[in-house]
Length: 162
Image (tube, rainbow, N blue to C red):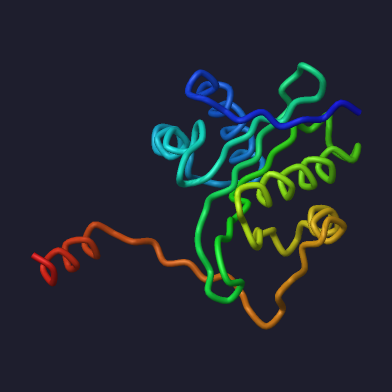
């Protein structure tokens, strides 16, 4: 199986957007369209924010994977979140996801990443088995919580720090 990752560049913008739309449709993510396209652009190329790789089977692009960088005191250094990973339907279940995650872990190590995180739907047992098979473990005593930051939050912050 000739699987590899290729760092996405600005010239890959439309292909990445196509895969993102497919992934968002598959997962029922409502964040697509112009906002999603704008969110992708800062990650293309060797970005300080993260990486977008296209997944290739031979010379055929079959998906993408994105990591976004952060920092963690708990793990003593740089961390990254596997933000999105998508493989076209006809290539699923063939071991490609496992191979890709091994490549992502190797790339992350080269980038000085100490730990990778990801989230998976509680109902997606197939994906959970895949992630466990490459070393991702649930942290049962924690759960991910999110708070969207609004323009009102920004205005409040600006008032405190003129």
